[in-house]
Length: 246
Image (cartoon, rainbow, N blue to C red; front, top):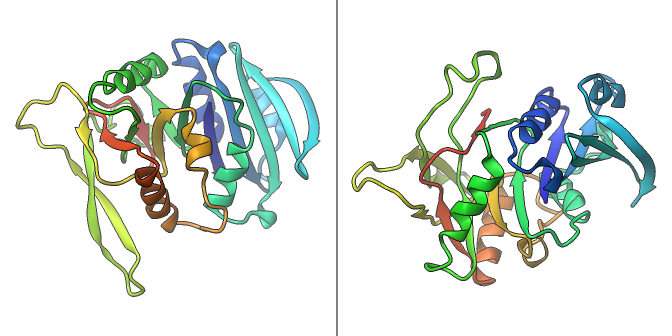
């Protein structure tokens, strides 16, 4: 299960294409996008990019378009951008389409992926079962720029640390390069959760569903606390498997 909120993002379609084409098992993917858009984007843009439209219906007050590419199923929950209610709300809307898939990937709509990213994430998560019964991979992925990808992408991984507190006491985070000593051949224990990259067992979607009342920034704090109290242990990947446009 792949959940993506997208707000007027020109990188959404390139992200979906890379996600599907670089997957080892694209037919196993169920991708749900909360597609918040204006007049600059239409359903025809997806069809022109190679997606096939299977059906459209009204679900939970919003049109839902079911697309396919290379065997992967992509559901677009269509929301006019003037009706958007924030990142937490958009993520929750996508999460409501969860169908008991074995694994869960939460990302943003501006990413690129390594070859066989899906199999590698599963392998990395499963390698942690001896360290935790409920492991979770998260963090701020290395950066890329669409116009120069892949030549200028970062090829190191990082860990999340506290950047500081703002004037009303809300914490913010930063990514720093993961220490090279010792040389790491397994994920590193983490303290915090990134909303823009989280890979877990599928049950996480129901255990720690996003809070729709958190507009932005605070949703990472709330998710981290709730995930920890539900018994999840956090880890940062020790090798890059996807890239994020910051």
